[in-house]
Each structure stands twice: as structure tokens, then as C-alpha cells.
Image 1 (cartoon, rainbow, N blue to C red):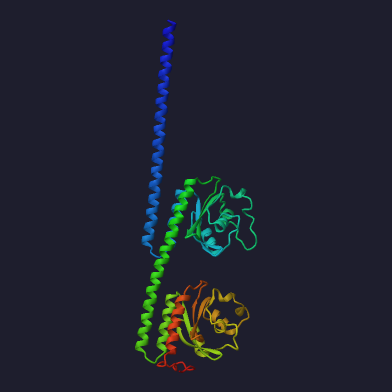
Image 2: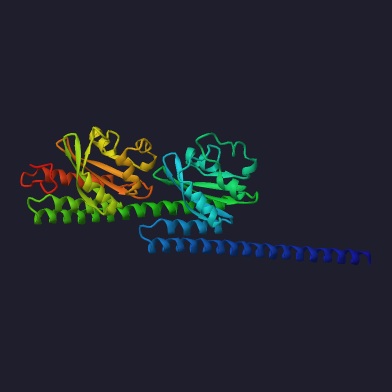
Length: 402
């Protein structure tokens, strides 16, 4: 009897063991299936995000802002962050180009800050210094994170939006830093290696978009320049011996292609410069030059045209209202700012066999650097060539004749 009981107990124990093993196997299969489904869902989500970004790129040729916005929004969502920001590098500084998840007011505040140099212990500062990903588990307990020396910017999103955990990945093109993407969490929860890897993939896409946009813009610029050159050559062929229409055509093309508001073309008369062509200026500017078409450099030695005359080099002023000559109230400079509304200007010398014969200046009425130096130099070469041609004379505006 006792033997039968012992056998029964062994049989029951064996059955229970087999049942437990079966349940464990089923649980493992279910867990594996759940993990597989999760990874499949993540892969599909990532593929959808990539397709969305590629769609934005195809719909916005040559435009980076919508691409950055779509890319950043997808990165924040897929990596389970609260908000994010994308920056582009300018030397050892960065400029905010896009945000996701922050209020409109904070977005405007961050963008209006313009160029800033992140503190060396911040995530952005580390990316700039090392060109490697920087992961901060808890900004509030990170040594030196908020210790910012003069000349550097504090970690704004940690201060203004309470970001605790953040990761910054570099945008690299052939080893050179072109920017960074940073995503943030308001709770202390480090990002996983997989999430960081995903963010790095988005950064790689951003670099591709930047390069594609650069190539497209270069192609457009080349076509614009070829068209502008053809137009000027057409004017030259239709106006033999006449400089005024040639100057006007060149100045119009240079102003338009460089994205300026209006422009001036000057010819040199010994120690003076005479305005001989204008394109697109406000009425006050036209009237001003009609009354006083000549700038005597001896009376206005600090004006930008005087700098061009002295150096025979390009002069680029981002904000002329911040110039010392404006503070000293030079009347011509004051009129340029207060009557004509000029803030940013670019001046290029007109050289013929190394001798200065004039200058072209183009202007913007907002503070925004002009990137048309190379184009202006090409326009200037054409003008110098025309001035060297003995078939042309300049008499319409007086002052110079050949």
C-alpha cells in the first residue's frame, strides 16, 4: 500500500513538473512573440518616420526648415522624449534652427537668442569639443553643468523647461561638425542605447538633407548666375558705347540674386566716389543721392566706401547701426540708417589691373548677413572689363570719361 502511495506521489510530482515546464515554455514563446511584435512595431514606426522625412525632403527641395521640423518631431516621439532642438554650427557657436515639444513663446525666445556658445560642460558644449554623443542622465546633478563662464551660454532648456535627462548627437559631414540634435526628458530616465542609435540615424539624415540642399542651391545659383551673365551680355551688345544700361543691369542682377533690398554702384574720381547707378532704393535714398551724388573720402574717412578704397577688399557689415561711425553721427552714415533703413551691407571693390575704379554696395533693411560675395565679385569683373573697353564712355552721370 505504501509502495502504491509512493508511486502515486512520484507520478503526480512528475506530471506537475511536466506541466510547469510546459507553462514555462509557453511563457517563453509568448514573451518571444511579444518581443518580436514589439521590435516589428518599432521597425515599422522607424520606417514610417524615415519615409515621412524623405517625403518632406522631396516636397521641399532646397528648404531645410520643414525637413528639420519633421525630423525632430519624429526623433522626439520615437525616442520617447519630451522635447528637442536642432542646431547648426557656426564656428565654435551654434544657432537654433528647429524645436519640437516646447511652447511657441519659448521657441521664439530660443531662436531670437541667435548665435550662442554653449558652456563646455553642457551636452552641446561637449559635442562641439569632442564631436561625439553626449548623454546626461540628470542635468541637475551633473558636475559643472550649470557653471557657465563669461562668454558662454547657459543650458537654456534645462533652466527654462526643467529638462533633466538629455542626449546630444553631432551632425558630422566628413568629420566636420555641422550641427547637433538634442532631445530632453523632464524626468530622470536615461535614454537606451537603441534610442541613442536611432537619434544618431536621424542626425545622419539631417546631414544628407543639408548636403542635398547645398548642392541644389549651388545648382540654382549657378543657373541664376549664367542667366544674369547672359542678360548683362545682352545689354552690352544692345548698348554699344553706353555704360548706364550696363551698370543698371549688373546692379539689378546682383541685388536680386544676392537677396538684397537695393544697391548702389560707385565710380571713383580721385579722392571721391560718385553714385552712378541705383537699383530698388527707397524714395528718400534716391533724393539723397540726387542732391549729393559724390562722396569726398577726405570728409568721410570712416564710411564703408572709404574702407573699400583703402583696402581694395570686400567690406561686409552685419549691422551698420552698431558701427562706431554711426555713433559718431557721420551725416551720410546717419542718413543711410535713418532715412534709407539700411542695416546690413556688402561692398565689393571694382578693380582693373589692380587699380580701384569703383565699388558695388548692396543693402538689406534687416540685420541678416549677405552671402553674395562671390557673385558680386563676378559682376564686378564684368564691369571692370567694360570700363577697360575703349568703345565705352561714361558721360551720362558726369565725372568720368574715357
